[in-house]
Length: 127
Image 1 (cartoon, rainbow, N blue to C red):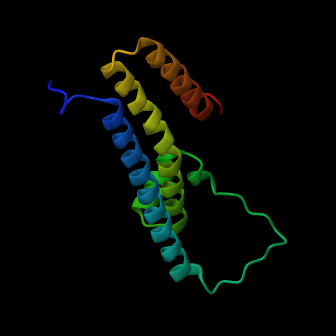
Image 2: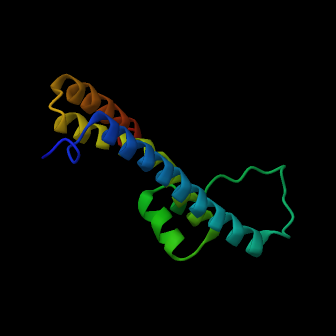
Image 3: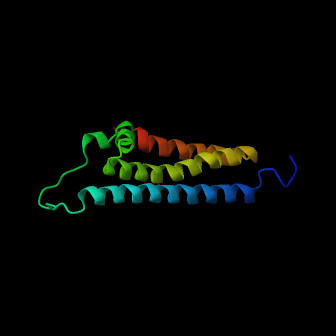
């Protein structure tokens, strides 16, 4: 590849910046849509703050959140937007592994893999 088309530090930083921007904007749009659906359906409901009601069990798993969002349930759409927000920096770290590998910077590939593994363990390793 020539110098204009290869993976340079600047190009990798640009892609990572665009990835973060797109992830946050997509997440915000999904949460906003979910909030609009919620307000249309429940905006006039009275709220009882004396009783705490946690998230329903179907919104505590990835499968349940996606199923709820596909059915256009407001809380499922909002949860999906929050998952997208959480996925954004994880995608950034995954792309950084690719970027460092393209630059053949093995030390940073190793460090970034350790960071990625820690992120994945913190998300998936606890039940």
